[in-house]
Length: 357
Ligand code: PEP
Ligand code: MN
Image 1 (cartoon, rainbow, N blue to C red):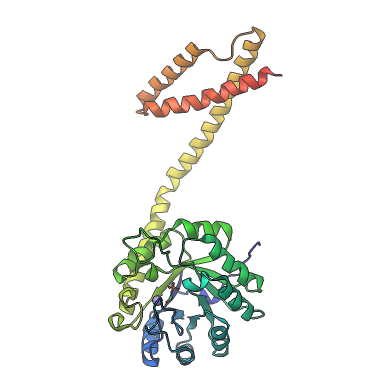
Image 2: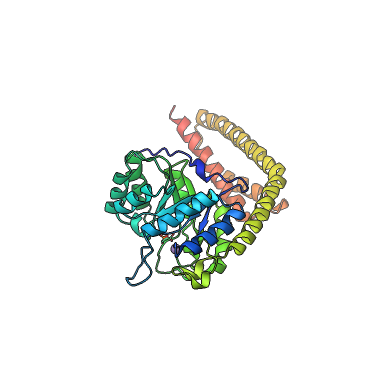
């Protein structure tokens, strides 16, 4: 299925050159949600996240306030004007969240792993083209992630985005969930134009690793960040270790923008050198073509005189000359030998092919 998503305009940020969604892991109380939302709104954040229903690995942990929490999100929206989003994992969640006027949904990593659940969500959203972000499945299976997009798209949802939050792999030591950067890169290739955000919070599992991951994600061309922010992370009811305070987010945004300016400047500085490389590569192609034409000429003459195509002593002297010349420019002998081998093989191929004419 060819998926053609639409841009989610709500996500446009006025002050940043990337998308930012921020907010607490869970909506814990009206006060907690509002305090956090006010801090974020004051620093220009436009999109607020908070989980109303929390999928927990083990029962008995805080599982969210459900519909009550949706009311708090509505208050955030009316008070700050931010877009509010929450996680939905089944049709009942979708129905309540739509009724409460939540602006955008995300599908959690555990849910993406379950095709029945994703299909149920897709079916319950038929005719409602609300923005939906799909987190990567817990395991490193790109097809499951793509399958979720196909199910949603098949139900008429076009305002889709992906959230790369890392994968559960057995040999990851540093992060809670292994980044596996190649997977979102491949996702972008398979669904061109898809907006991909990075969630460095769940990836890191630890607040100190959030900034370097955020920076890496933007360097890897993520369209934006989806970050957990809590006014009092230490006392958070879920994901306490990985949430950062609004003040730390502010610092992070500042260092990210400095970093991005530096990267842009660096790219500017590289420009003339890159142009030089491009021009040189084009000249190499011209020279190789000229060499092959000369070699074709030799081939014609060998044929007329019934000479063998491959002449080993000639091969050796050409290779030696080239290596000797390369040495003058500090080129590695093995590299020059390999280069000569490629050129020579192609010339011989030409001469043999023309021989059949
Ligand atoms: C979350 O965003 O709080 C969450 C539960 O994320 P994930 O599905 O990535 O674990
Ligand atoms: Mn969380």
